Length: 510
Image 1 (cartoon, rainbow, N blue to C red):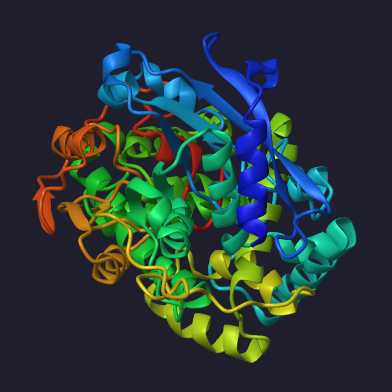
Image 2: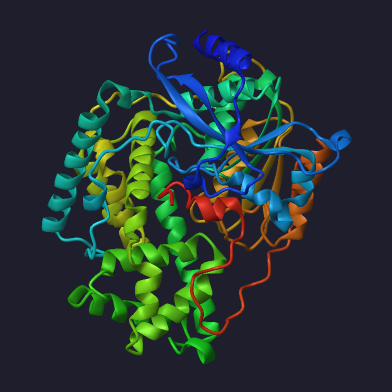
């Protein structure tokens, strides 16, 4: 009832679009506004949040226009406000001719009632050291920091903290649909955006027009979110190996070793050196890890990362500092994104309260997947000490939304070697949504497919968005071309899609 009331009010008010604030860095043709949503849908007339919204009108003739296409890049904690920018990018031209591109910042993100758990300067403090296999003393430090972070979230947000959830993100999406004047929603969600899009389709199936889920989160309630992170750490180990093998094949360019083991030895040499002497006074082992984690998200990071490592080992610290050092101007945004990520994941589902469980599970996992395991623990450990109630995840699929029926056919996109959202998750959502169609990019691992260099994937998306036709229950595309080594240059990789530029998946919004 609270959602229905908020949606009626939003439909009556609409959105007063005007010039976008300079801080959004959007094209001149884009327009921005706000939509009000209840903080608590059980009390929809009480406290309200204003969500920022961006829009650029469809570029094609009026006769071909199909309404608003709403986009979310995931996180949790990432903003979609930049989405109108993609109307001018080649991979999105067909959709941009037919749809208004609409982005927004979910509750708590950026200017949408920003959530904070810690002083941004403290959050971005560098250099920092993070061992691959932490000692007992370091683990005690992790626990202390996790407890302090959870207390900071409670102190800064108060009773509002409990209302940052996937369920409320899905409810907000329905209010936005109404404010845009759309009877049914056309939506593209990437990474975490696929999960709350699937929750939306479960709660409001009659309000769904078309939905594309790009790089799919496993919606099984048993996976949300503790087990999801265990699976993610294991998947990142495979992608980390993919990068090392690729670098080894191009040893004539990088001189880091002609086997994956030798490339790993080169990385470890750099890590040991940084533990003693941080590069430029800014890059320690923690910053090194965060930079090279990006190789697991997007092939476009592979070349620049290999060049930076090679230069550092030759004595030139500049490229590595450019690649890995924190940007002080991003400290507020990054702390905000981390706060929203933590609040949503901790609120959404039960988490183990016992450190012994975390320690046992991840000690065993780190023997198989050392690269990401303990860093992922540090990222999520505040959930063990969370001061707000842990909820039970919704059962996604027909019947999960109190018998409201099934949505129309939706389109799922997945790469077989995706680390941030392992491929098994796409198969699980495909199974749960009757009539859904799964497009698989074989032997590929970049996170976020739509708008990237795979014309086969883009053609399936364009056909679906423009006509509603799906390609059958399951189809596959050959992988995108492997990256080619280039002459050294900065800044970093070419952009592949809004998902890979705005979000790095479940682990960390950027």
